Image (cartoon, rainbow, N blue to C red):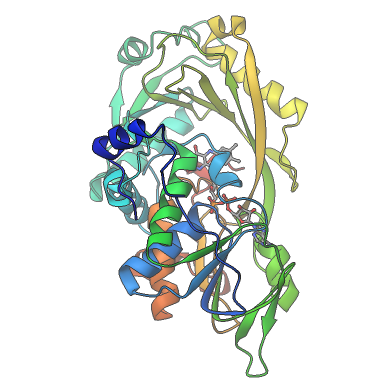
Length: 416
Ligand SMILES: Cc1cc2nc3c(=O)[nH]c(=O)nc-3n(C[C@H](O)[C@H](O)[C@H](O)COP(=O)(O)OP(=O)(O)OC[C@H]3O[C@@H](n4cnc5c(N)ncnc54)[C@H](O)[C@@H]3O)c2cc1C
């Protein structure tokens, strides 16, 4: 693999950047692999990378119906955090933040990773109680959550001029999560793809999996694609939002529902906000990108749907919520808006699990799953390689629904 560095940049400048190697190959599709991963999003590509790097399994094909990194991995608002509630969840998210911390170096790819803290703006006492409880839990696992006063909050975010004592919902406290970060989302997909390719993993774009195939022994046998049958000893689904469409081809039903989550950006403005601001009581959060655009996300559309655009009423709710706290932003022009289809399990915790079909694995239910990509890929690779759950994702197994052993995280996501 060609290494990226200041020297290779300078060397390639001399040849007008015509001699860069492609970041990954496009080999012909074989008719059989050890492992097929469906979905070249963050989780699928990270799993392919760690399968090769950590477990020496390189006869792997990642099949993608569209283009690599064109799904939710490139549609999110790039917030990375570990402020979860449950003992089963926090260590997983602490691990993912730790992997993100070293990922630019590990992948030799500039992810534009920026550790910048997230500040929760608290406007109701039930939320304050929940957040303080979270703080105590997180403390046990070395994850940071520190309360600040309203005046400290206003000092750190001068643009936040709403939410005064005479407003509908006055701000009553702030909570700072210093581990939070942002990073360039599609670079995560490209970095993992390039890293996996260097180990010999194949990525096949425009290759849609239509159904899963089961052998006469009951095990997974491969997948049927728009380009023919591809056999595999093991198949992992990393298709965010579309898992049930595939598992249903084998008659497997999963406790997942798909919803639409949206975001939008403003025109670029001078540096204004240097943290991620999260307003959980009114359902809006925002940060400022390197280009100066404000990146704004809201609550999901409550109706189940596979749409990837934004509904007018959902968009208006998010704008109205933002203007309550940032009234000066009413002068900003909004430039782009988009959505993605995400699935969520009944307890708002992801599923990284074996299934009733031996050799078939799923990683699914990732609501805030961008932050989870490094640890999600790392643990899925372990599961596929060893056919047993990594300790970090043992509680994320499908078995928890059989035993009603839920990991309730609905308060820590924007999901309803
Ligand atoms: C608006 C929005 C904001 C978000 N903000 C955040 C955030 O701030 N922080 C955070 O942590 N998370 C956030 N998320 C969630 C995060 O983006 C997702 O949870 C995560 O990206 C999902 O994992 P992935 O990257 O593997 O999914 P994807 O990138 O969607 O990958 C799945 C891939 O599977 C492919 N696929 C599907 N079906 C098939 C098939 N049959 N055959 C072949 N390929 C198939 C798709 O084309 C896609 O490329 C946000 C999501 C949205 C939509």
